[in-house]
Amino acid sequence: MTTTTRPPRTAATTGRARTAVHSNATDTRTLLACAAVAGPLWVAVSVAQVLTREGFEPTRHPLSQLATGSLGWLQITNFVIAGILATAGATGLRRVMRGTAGGVAVPRLVRTIGVGMIAAGLLTMDPADGFPVGTPDGIPESMSWHAYGHMAAGSVTFFSLIAAGYLLGRHFSRLGNRRLAVVCRVAATVKLTGDAWAMSGGAAGPVTIATGTTVMFALLAYVALHYRRTA
Image (cartoon, rainbow, N blue to C red; front, side):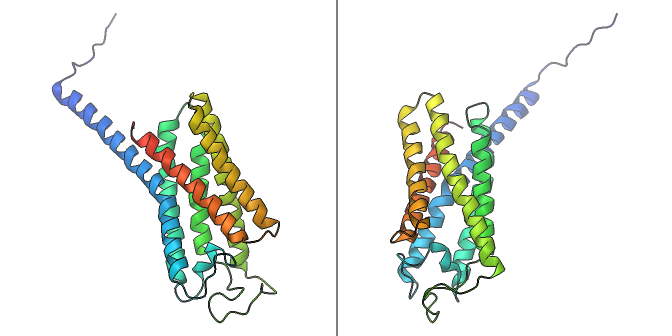
């Protein structure tokens, strides 16, 4: 009969284990910081362009239309960078939400949001309704393939934002954080209502879409920072 003995844990192996744990925690906090920055960065850069781009009217033109014209590269870059940050941040959320209600679905939705934003940036809308300056008023008679792609990417992103909000409400309700659960559900409802209003042809539709998107991005940023403090 033979027996096996474990080698004794030395100070060196213990130190390496502690370093690995610390490194993993640091990586997680960095990923959560990416999740927290993604949405607010996109909103801030978009608002800066709304205030400075000639001919842009937020009640008529969706923020995605900033990706057209000679300065369109700014909004394209904005979409892509924010999407990359959100995609990375989803990994951080997966780590800290593991084993909880929504711990699988929410990070996947956030990753889908990130990929959708990248696609929406690369697949731009067509010039329309007087923007960029010199474009005829009204909606073009036909759409380009990349405009259709943008609509598809945007739809997936918006659906994922709404679903993530409601699932986060369930997540925090299960954890006993009733107040944050209500905030999550209200944010998702604001986004859902804003999109539905715009799709029904309501006045200032681009504003209601942008408002709902901003609210949901703020919520995701708060959740990421909430978990980053304890990661």
